[in-house]
Amino acid sequence: MEKLNKLYVTVLIVSNRTVKLVEAAINKEKGYYYRERN
Image (tube, rainbow, N blue to C red; front, side, top):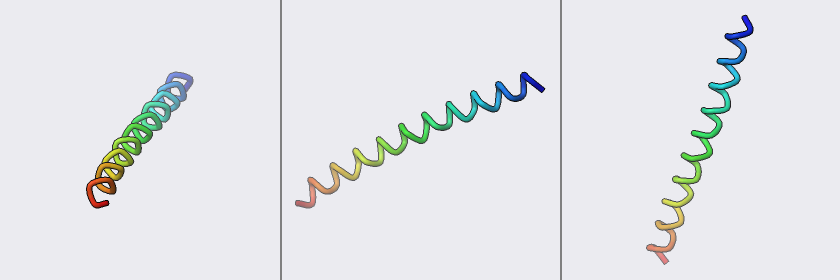
């Protein structure tokens, strides 16, 4: 049970980081897009 909890927490942390990276990439793309349009 303890192992399962640690695994779950690790997965949460990793997915959280992944989401942040994806959001950063999307924001960067949006920034380029807006700059190109203006």
